[in-house]
Length: 219
Image (cartoon, rainbow, N blue to C red; front, top):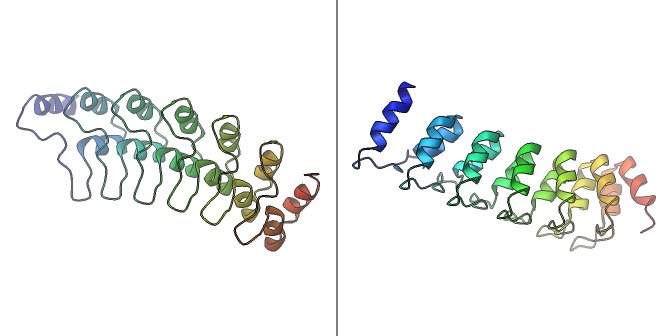
């Protein structure tokens, strides 16, 4: 409570730069999000001077760090603010949805999917989409949620031509492969630019169960 009153006093003083950051670019809002200070975040968001999208030097925004850490209530607060850029990405192209998929934060992913502003296929610098990332990491529930959304391009590939199915086969993610094969939109024969198909990749990596699944698909 003491902190809240101090922050109120500071915000009421027009001389205070509400967006002044640390050497790494962290603003008061970013720090509050990183540390889970919900009441402080509410105060900061209520101030029109606060730049809600100001990022670290590496491009991480307050929304990004909240998604990375799985802070549901903070994400809800940020998504309810129309000023927040829901797709603002890091220097390597990682979006809030990408990082949530990488970390396997299913509730965060569901929140982001429910927000129509979020670009579900926005990809990293190497072409990796949220679905590709989730498939590679083997996060079953995240993959299910993404496949259930018709806006998701299930075959969107990386720069080398690798699809989400390629990624799952490469990593030997048997249950993910099973999910993808159950989706009729998935192109099971899509190849890398060097010609390698998902089956070729699975064979090369020696993932027997994945190979069996692929061979059992008549496509």
